Length: 85
Image 1 (cartoon, helix red, strand yellow):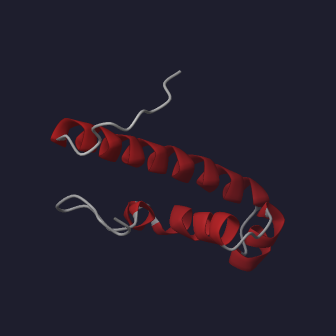
Image 2: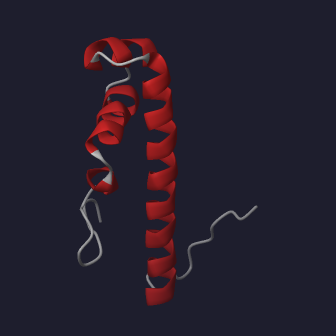
């Protein structure tokens, strides 16, 4: 269900990110701005944008992984096959 989240967790995982990481994730991934334009928009160096994107992606991946594990544990993911490396 879109927007569904566990108790105490934000409906959109990016809300849990620090503001700087959330800003670059939204501008780059949701609005499609290139890294350079994100840097110009926020008036920060491109290296800072890249670092925040990297840390934000890692944090989101960890959060989404935890949610997946919670669903598996709660039996909500029965019958759904996931690809494992």
